Image (cartoon, rainbow, N blue to C red; front, top):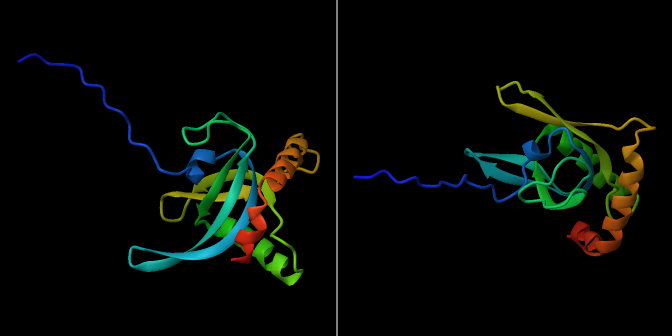
Length: 151
């Protein structure tokens, strides 16, 4: 029996994960806070559109800067930031929640995995100009943002 070399592909994720954008500059447009069920318990999540501003393209994000639509975050810092913006938008009758921005960070979590958060940019960070340009483009190209927030 001869041994043939078989090429085996790595499995792909169906979505961009927070680990994929760790250490990257982002602008996050909160859409909603939801609940999902896993391991017999419900847990909250933030659904948001995310503009990735720096780093190399990803398998599921072929250009950077680029937008990841309807990304789900389950980490408390990400959820709390989104909740604040969503509540503020409702309280002030804004057409949609204001985005927030920063650099995704990770550290060792209490349960041994990775815990993710977001660090704010310095006021004079050079990424701010790109952030404003890309966020403006996104808003102009995404009229459904208002409709999604109203759902």
